[in-house]
Image (cartoon, rainbow, N blue to C red; front, side, top):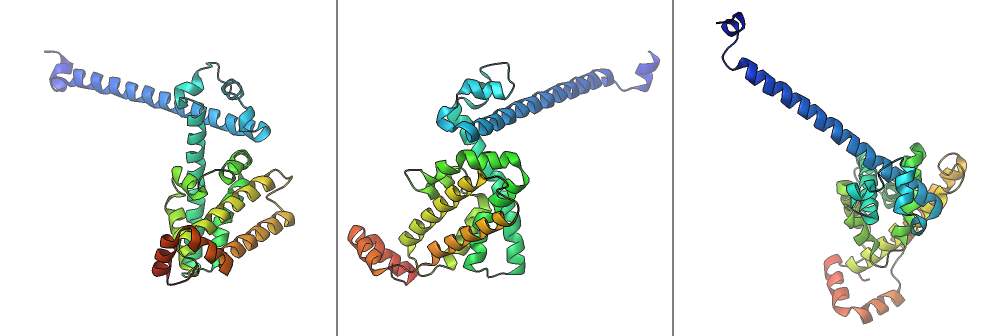
Length: 266
C-alpha cells in the first residue's frame, strides 16, 4: 500500500478529480453565460442607439449587429430570434429599471406622507423616467427610441404597459393609490383618463429627451413641473354632462355598473 493510499480514504482521488472537473465545467459555463449576457446587452444598446437616431422603421438587423461589434451576422437571431424579440427584451429590461426607481421613490413618499395627494402621485408617474434619463445617457436613448411607440399604440396604452410587466408591484401600487384619490371617476372613465395620462407623459418625455441638457438645469425643472401640472389637470378634471351623456349612449350597462361601484356619476 502506498503512502497516499494509507493517508487518504479509498476513492479520494477519483472523487476529487470529479470535483475539480465539475468546478472547471461550472467555471466554463459561467464564463459562457457572462459572454452571452454581454452580447445580448451590446445588441440591445446598439439597437437603442440606432433607433434613437433613425427611428425603428429605418434600422435593420444587419446594422444593429454591426453597431454592436458582432462578427457573427446571426448573433441577433441566436439570442432574440428576431427584431421584435430584441425590442421586447429591451422593454422588459428598461421596465425593470423604471420599476426599481419607482419603488424607491414611492417608498420614500409613503414613509413621509402615508396619504399622498394627487400631485404627489403624478410626480411618481414622471420622476422615475426623469431621474434615470438624467443619470444615464443610455436610458435617455431608450426614452427617445420608444416613448412614441407607447403613445401611438392603437389599443389601450395600459394594456401595452401590462405586456411588459405592468410596471411591476410599484406600478400596481401607484395605480391603486391614484384610483383612491380620484373617486369622481367610475371604472370606465378612470381607465380612459389613465390611458390619456400615460400617452401624454410618454410622448412629452420622449420629445423633451431630444433637447440639449434636457434633464438638467432650470429648463428641465420647468418642463417636469409643467408635465406634472398637466397630468394633475387631466386626472382631476370633473366629468362633464356631455361626456356623461355620450358614455351612457355608448355603454349604458357598463356606465350603470360603474356608478354602482364608485357611488359617483361619470
